[in-house]
Length: 340
Image 1 (cartoon, rainbow, N blue to C red):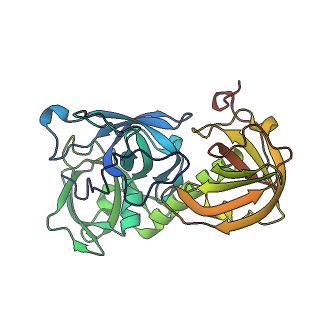
Image 2: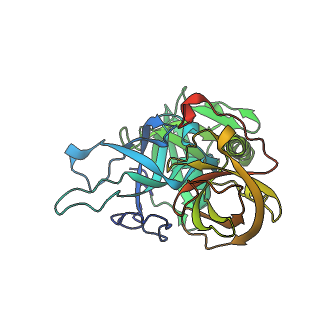
């Protein structure tokens, strides 16, 4: 069984409080394969990894989930939207229940705070897989990181269907030689042993390129859709709205927001879908940018701005998509709009 498969951060049995970011370490970590995606409403389904705490009758159960408004998705070490993640990707997540389970009822962890692929998890934990051998489709590796090497090797499947990334291009299975420290993304984890490798990154150059490409994909998406945030407070007399950007906001885009700059804000639902951002945005100057505690789900950046006029949807606890004044606010595809 793949090491660091399920690491308990908390029980996740206390639902997140509306208008509050969850405390550090309060969710439950669950891993599994992405088998269904609803990219518009930010939801999907995982096939949960098998582990020793399960009965055999509970193996391979499907877990439908919805991303919390402030959830973060990571792919190839960079921020991503759920639509960027291919079906079959093995993911590690942090989950909460939507409501506390009744007595003697099995909890359902349907709210996701974090989803990350194996690449992103390895990068975050500063771990790699060190190749020992690759023979007849069996890739023998040993995980290693700051805390040392794993006591036992792991045996993945790797074959002609595995994509090999080397330098600025593709490699072959012949390039997977003993001693290399690699990253791997897998599928059918625990369903067929530790899993089958979909992708192998053989060097830092290939990993950097993968990370940079995903970074640009996400940055473009956020410029077109706005940064997700919620409303902390509204001063009706002064016409000032206070918002906190969510953790998924690209840091370089957040830095563009400065005092006296103009922003445009569109009302959104908890799915972060807007109604008609091309016509619904209201603009106004930024009056303050400040740092706030970077709790799970929070970017740690809060702004106060004066939209003209205040809309009905500008209420504490509601959600916005916010655009820096220099970004073009364009129409969205029909299926992404709440108003059609």
